[in-house]
Image (tube, rainbow, N blue to C red):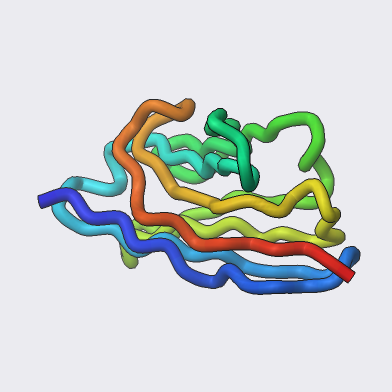
Length: 117
């Protein structure tokens, strides 16, 4: 059974930082590109945030988070990460890790990130 379990969310002030983790099981993690996606409160749209290649060498980001977020992975631990710095109010959302690139892959239950003063 494929499982993706996100953690690390919370409430921070603008300018703060959080590190999200996604522990996976039930599939060969190292064979899949992985992504982080998010859904803002009251929005019916899931937004792609970032993806990383299978080997972790290349990361891709939506323009609004470039220079602030860093995606990484540890294939030995089957774990995906998202380091989020200089957080903005508009980053408030439920964050999900997802298999493959884009918003349609299997994803976990999510972790809430709230940025407010």
